[in-house]
Image: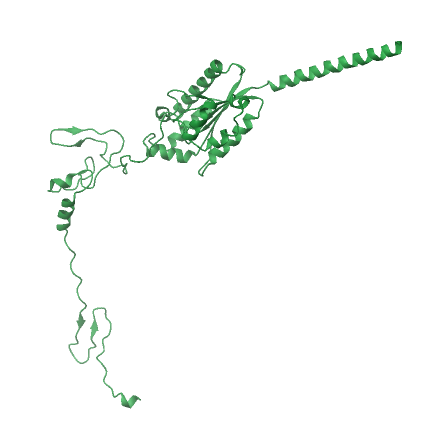
Length: 338
């Protein structure tokens, strides 16, 4: 009886010791898993573009955009996501084709030079340690592929407590979101709205939280079509163009289309103004002005016919104007050569 009691006592003691060890290991593991919490901000920079006034400031505007985005995310987490630790860090990645974005911004008049976009995102990246802009280069879906893989990686990362996903402009991301419709996953995703959500994304937005930060991202897509032509810079285009002898209109600093039928003002030498008033149309010449101009075109002189020099004596050989010899027709008896 005493032997069984001793065995039971020993078994209980060992079980309690083992339980204590497991609890210590679990506590350490939980502490490790709670270390370095962060929220992820993933933005497709080809369509989620910051406001024009920030981009025009170059590097300073990039720093301003980063500070605004950090504050907006921090406030939203504090107010709407109480389950996220207060000490969590904000990791931001923006993927875009830098050269393509710069060209579009210049064509649309947002930026006056292409390297202004480079300066903007340099300021954005340098202002925060965990803020990065990644230039994916030209190519279809390069930004989409990188953002998709990083989205999946962070969604399965225990340290990542929430994902802010900037993709409202691209229906292609609907295929990705359709794979994660479980409530345990959707509550960890917030969709950022810049331009209005595309049709397929709009049908999914009811399953996710959405947020729109005012005056941070553009709310409309950049339109590079149906814009006034921007010619090569010419002297005097930004100076007043006189519309009448008594009035003058000062044009804005951006370049203005100069019709070839309108005299150019400024430092360049203007061509004589045509006498027909209809040719002063700054948009396009009329049919009458075109016909009138064609009627005054002087035709080039006709090409002279080739001349043949004739010999002045029996000793001279006739030649054409190119100096080639001209022999008279030969007379011979065909039958004698048979």
